[in-house]
Image 1 (tube, rainbow, N blue to C red):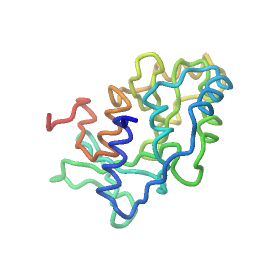
Image 2: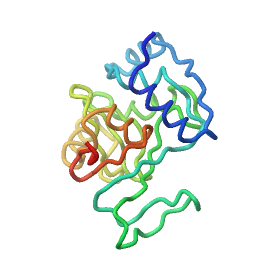
Image 3: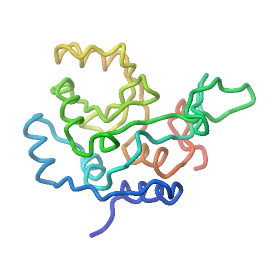
Length: 195
């Protein structure tokens, strides 16, 4: 069976980080279909590819970004620090489902009950303070400040997303290119500057 780009990107991550041992995901297409039925949603194919790919025994992955950042994550110390004036690239942090401690779809299902009916799915947390969302029709990835999105009624949640969400990546594949394949991404311009 041919590998998806998501699988290839995660395998590249493992090559760059040999200390991270990939474990093949045991999530089946049937489990994903049952989840779609319970949540009354259609999960984009690229996200399904992610679910069927690997379980990552890490709490988060990091990406290198150009943009308007004041802090950068220091991988050596495991803490955030001020970005120096001469530094142009910030290290950012992304936490997705299938990272420790859960190795199943329970976290994804639980959080997405609050997003049901909005046209968006929660994918994870960016830099500890922003939801990462995928618009189910277009497949575009957005980030939204967690404090600005009310997870109350479907209409309020959707209204807050529409008001406060910012474009993040054009697709889940682009997110994988940055956070798994290790490509530098310009968050302000929404481009990979090396192209």
